[in-house]
Image (cartoon, rainbow, N blue to C red; front, top):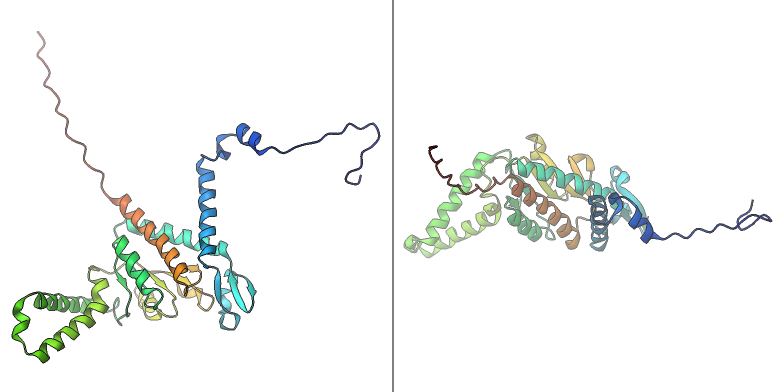
Length: 287
């Protein structure tokens, strides 16, 4: 029977959908206060934030890596557009893993030496209390960790020398040489001076740029997480997060969520405060 046709003598039945009645008569699983609805709202807000920050914008189609095909949604004006669902999936997996690592008390090394990412990496790593590399990845930072620790000792020695009046005993030329050495070492080693052991995970921006960090981490069996663009190889990292690795807002949003996961994991591992001792009065002797 075609739509809108009514047979003669057939009563007309009309339905009107009223969502307010559905909300009032359905179980609490569908109520806005339920945990299920909160998760949905949180996911919707995350997607909106990602789109606003331009995380879904990739490189030009001529620069793409064919292995990124599963993460690409479409192309427009010769620019690839990444699937935001894959970005959310990768981000949630990375946050879950980083939270578990932080709960275990292990170290997480943040690395990003690109001009757009260096300041963001430093700020977020300091906020969550983890080591970072934001200027230059020194060869052997992980594979030759003992030598790097020795250089950190030299950095502390130069800091003590500059803080005292002993540096005034040197000639002007020697003082200039010592100050230049201190600035160079401080720029390259200050972020990892708290890294007293090998980290369990390395988080990088653009594995093409940080290929040395990825190579050293894989040689030592360290897990790697990376924000990858359409010109990267997702097989080079363990947990890829497809997204724009050149935009400031994109990098800032992704690493803010990752740092929040680390802070949440570290807060969960904190021992609970001891309850104050309660004095129990002595029992009176029975007459």
